Image 1 (cartoon, rainbow, N blue to C red):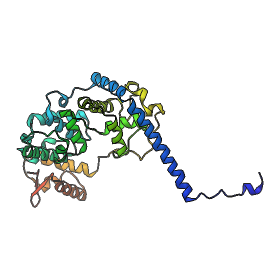
Image 2 (image 1 turned 180 degrees about the horizontal axis):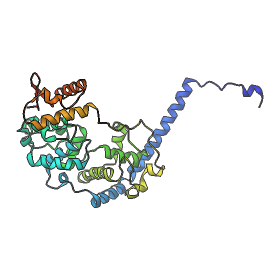
Image 3 (image 1 turned 135 degrees about the vertical axis):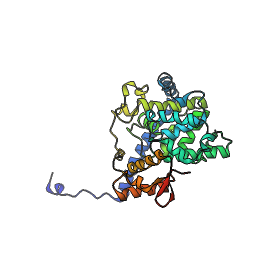
Image 4 (image 1 turned 90 degrees about the horizontal axis):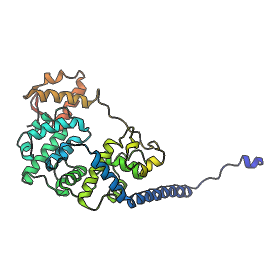
Length: 332
């Protein structure tokens, strides 16, 4: 090799050439993903049989899954289970359904009673939204939770996931139900990724819809079965691949369980945050069963600025009502 060759600068890559390379890489990845998804869909019938058989043998007995539970029970459970584990939800769910077995029963009481009964379940705005949904069901649907997805979606506090879940689980309709557990199972099984994207994507929905059984009853059971698989086996940390019924077909397992290569997954902190302060303020109001003076709220947190910010947030969210200067209560 002569000196001119050693010192020769590498040829400049034109922007067009770079774009072509990048486009080719993207197209290659897209073609690979499409091929993987097509293969999974072709094997869908066998996949259905395997997962449904596993679910029949391993499903947890939960009160909202009982044959006579009804659509209201399913809706209450879905609101409570958002970002909250089953073991924390169960006692609250039972107490709630005993007190308010129908939407009309809940709607007949002030929204503040829903917040009070929510206790320490977390994310108390869910209680307000559930009360608002119960009121709308009572006033617009004669107290019966609607079966139609669009009608469910029109209820206050009901998003696409909850509408699909209630229509599917309560009314056995055919809908794509994408919760965190389902998304994680499909990311590993079909896409070969440890975790799905931060937010649901159109590609995820296409894959989930393509895998949905055609028969509505089977589709409804499939939806909850995949969810259960994600909750019990294909968990976020330390998945138990040895117990997974579809391990032999899992793209992520076959690839050697590659680590997550997306944005870092940050755990939620609580201690010292505004969420903790809000919880302490609400606890005082829940336990008082009456109007609460400012002094009682001031005693729960030493940082005046953070305490005021948290209280203002509770008022803005409709979780607390100021009834006079320096006096507060739960809504209604």
